[in-house]
Image (cartoon, rainbow, N blue to C red):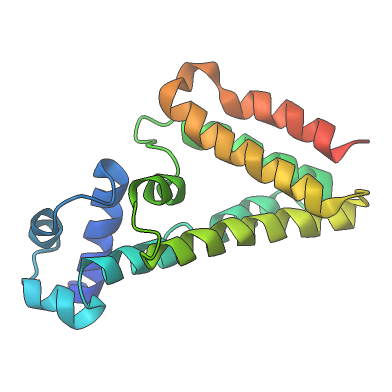
Length: 183
């Protein structure tokens, strides 16, 4: 017998699915219906929809996926960075791909004081730090600037693949990442 996840987990799962498919402005009723929970559970666990969105962003893909891809590529920093773009090619060509949930949320949430903005920035800063560490190990002359270039490439791939998936932007970005990495 399998046990059904509790209301908190069901709310998070439903919100992850629906906000990725429909954006962060998806209705609370749709989330509650998919999660099969009462409205009271949303307020008990998250204080409301804003708190739920923040938790979805905090606990979603995060940097774990990037680290796993890099770790699977071995120990060479160059191979580790390029593996990210190989994985982006795989991800962005999937029929279910809808872009970067973090960028989409950032662009959608017009209120500059929305608490989700801090989670979005933390994710992007973490990605920058991850790349900077690899570039430092690679002996890059300007690892912080190189990391910024790589983050721009990742963001570009995730945005461009939504509008022109057949263009395979991850392949173009991979070639550009090779230039950033240098010899």
